[in-house]
Length: 301
Image (tube, rainbow, N blue to C red; front, side, top):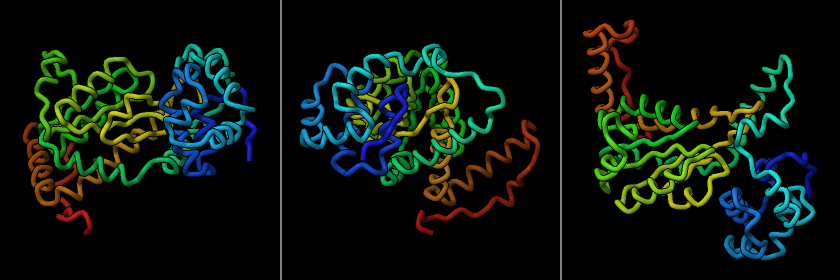
């Protein structure tokens, strides 16, 4: 059944609104459309359908589900909305409301719910496994994603000192990437708007046979196709800026899942960190290093 959608709603938002009602074939096409969104107007319906491995009838039904009369209408709409992702562009169409904090919270809550509905849980477990087995973890994030990269870096330092935020201070990106090895993992934060260099970093990591775990929004294009694990989070903001609540929650969850994989070794490291906090007096004491909780040594416990 076709859904009525506001004319100013982007195609990725329409897809997420309709996602739970899509058939498996339509979801295949949705993935292709999301990857092609920034240049959708340059593709024909047949090209998208062929890439997704679906029929022309499935493609026609899919775009009607999104509220378009046909693919041509979707393509024209995409061309008119080519400035998506820019706060300035969004400001032109966003009414400023007084006292709308409840709308802000409601949108964040919806982002979390939509992320849960659409994310592949098995991919989360794959990401945890890669991070747990990594000799070194390299974290990359630009623009909006830099704050996410810094947050992940802070949490992952609890597990290992061999966690690096790229580019490192005093080193060039080329020098850091030259050190990539197959038993490393590159954790990439790729929320929109993404710089072109991100795609090259992913390519270099794959050339070094290093797994790439990528956290992004639904509009991620071909860059995401080259990631070993791709985790997409809803990021629609109630105002002119994107919401980072869902990716922050996902990062927190990934690191919490790592606790179960490290067992006694993690307890010893965290106890050592707490003892050092006490020695240098850089934090108010809150947890005794001698009373650290026992962590399961086996993820299934």
